[in-house]
Image 1 (cartoon, rainbow, N blue to C red):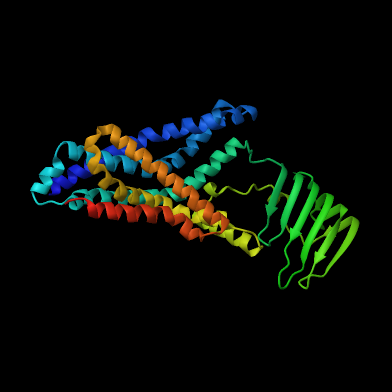
Image 2 (image 1 turned 30 degrees about the vertical axis):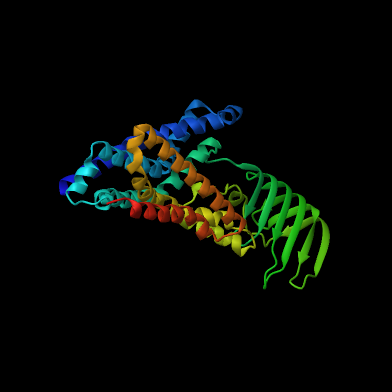
Length: 355
């Protein structure tokens, strides 16, 4: 039995590695075709684009883990079916469930690798994004942005030049809390002075109290020494969810929730950091019993089955994610619904396979 186990694992891992090597370049080509016009319009060089994809490659590898696991499982079972290994094993008293157990064990190990990648991918994605945005380390300006501080203050700025600490068309908002008044401030310009803080020019400020009362003043010059953010802090571009680790998303979501914002999208992305790598194991459980019928269509059947499975899973992932972001279901449920559906279906199919 150990010889058969080694044979199953060997074939599965060989096919998994083969598909894992072949699939990421297809994602690179697809992404390049989608964004090529944008790269040309922004004047990015061939070297910058190429280097950005080098740093994005771990992301594409992570995407391919469940696909490669599914293809590896389907074609391993197909190989055993066409070579009558399954028939021989059953004749020897070995059930189908026992026969595919080594692939499930390998799936657990591969899931661990996929989970480890969730800590690597955000860091490489961040570097790739910086290259594509042409962000030099010494960049001293930023335009048309929104910045949310940890204290709950939201800055909306048309343009910031950090070298002289000037901003134009500024909107500053702070929500009402139990121990702090709310604030809504609009100014044509602002300037930061190290001794005094932010000085705003030409605008008005509305102060909101917890009892719904409010006061409004118009000003030509207003000193706001309670705004502690410095120009260098406002230069920091907030990362996308793909550029943040689980802990970083958790921290960002907590800030948004504390300031009264909707963090559902971030919370769904946070839970998917765990659920999507686990799909590597779930998809093996789902694919192996289906593949027992692949002898009718050969390799074409296996490829078609795998493609249909991937498309179905992606559709379910998008629908569940949209429901989670809209608040129709919890972020935790939104992230795990596709896995639960496929795991339950896989268990039913596995039970129905004649052993």
